[in-house]
Amino acid sequence: MPETVHVVVQYGGRDLAGVIRGDESWSAAAKRLAATMSGEPAALDLSGTDKRFVVDPDLRVGLRSMTRGDLPDVARWRAADHVNRWWSDDGSPDLATVTEKYGPHIDGTTPTRMWVVEANGRSVGFVQDYRLSDYPDFALLTPDPEAIGVDYAIGEEAWVGKGLGSRMLWAWLLRTRHRFPDAATFFAAPDHRNIASLRVLEKVGFTQGTWFDEPQSDGSSATVVGCTLDVRRILG
Image (cartoon, rainbow, N blue to C red; front, side):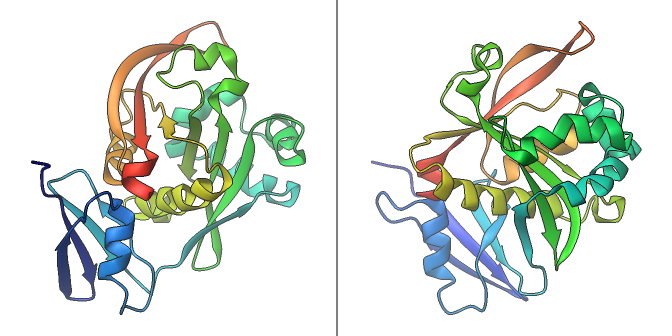
């Protein structure tokens, strides 16, 4: 007999609880429970026995396409210690290097797409995504070459540790589910020392898998943790 999965939606000071019905996704179950609430449920913590969501009308998190006008912000974010520690392989965070690195992604001349994260209308970070098979050397290291890969950073340090990581990734998950309806898996591979990022991924439904060494631009390698998300189970 299939295991019963419980879903909890937090709204204000109360919780609404229920169970997933049949082949219902976790997200669909949360939406059903939150049908009378003002706002859409977002993942709060999907790593435990109870799959916890939250409806918070006071925090609006969304993504928009990055433009070249956003690059000064990206350079500033990249230069911040809490970001550059994990993004140094993308080169110097000065504006010229950042423009050279990300400009082609913005222009649509590479398979990677760039997004700016907005919290209550303010730009606070960025996300990039791509189909792994468009980068064959990297895809060979992963369990599903057709998965959609994602990398992300909270740029504004004031937002670090405030729960934004899971909210921005959830916004990305929902958008990407529609952009790539054929994708069965989403994939991320943070550095094994990046405990905060690994925890954020767990909270939105990713599971940790194989550790592998990812080649870096300077000839070294970084040990990363392959994390995968079952699109159908989480999002439907």
